[in-house]
Length: 330
Ligand code: TXA
Ligand code: MG
Image (cartoon, rainbow, N blue to C red; front, side, top):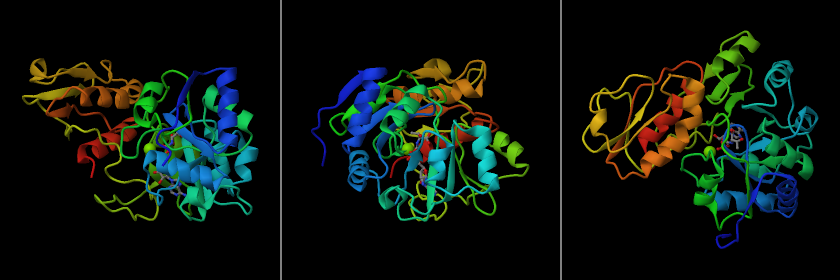
């Protein structure tokens, strides 16, 4: 185990970028901001580094990782793009979209990072700090969200520190992330498939493809073998508190996670209350989601009552994460 490491925290900047590139080259682990959530980076081509990453997160090794690259030329060394994939990359990279593609021959990504699949998940992040680290390191970096497996994804450096201090080498603090939910994952199969709703709304992708995305059949609790999206464990985003969705009123002892200008009956008695977006803005709600779940989880309430959030645009990703939070950790 690599528990017991001294975890350094550096503010984003030239010194942090150089330190991050050094740690990655030495097979170490770096927490760094992307536009979606903080990632925990390791050298994608170094099996020992990838193994350490799984250990540090407590992540099951059948759950493959996303490879982050600096540009399309680097992506093409790792994965094969058909016309449809090229169109999506062109339209949305850098940005909160991950494509699952067939591995290119000579793909440098360690087999452990792809859980032995013949596909690889890949994206170009749109965050200057992430980009600078990838550029300085000069190779592909695998990066899951920088939380302990099963916890809520981190949107500020302090969340990364809370989960992973003593387990990783370095955290680069680039402030709060922009989007707040993880990237949208599209499987570029014969029928393009939405594997995970995320920071890029489905509607934008369907507009570029000129067709609807297929969906994955819902996995059931405890089913870790769904072939298309091996990591989409139902209980992935769980806080400790019991989460109750689409509430009509707040019950005694509950904390309230509100959305929009309306107040829920019983709100005045809530143990604590936070509003994802008073003006009902889904982008603002996505950016606040994980931080507010963490804050309310710390209030010692008997549960978190969540008001309904519309299911279009970024609302699809918000509701997906809320449903997983409501199922709870197994
Ligand atoms: O926004 C994001 O995507 C963040 C930042 C750090 O980039 N990363 C992230 O990684 O959310 P992670 O590990 O928490 O989620 C990766 C997801 C998992 O659900 C995994 O199963 C899926 O990507 N995945 C990876 N490779 C895959 C593959 N070859 N086929 C299908 N799904 C894959
Ligand atoms: Mg994650």
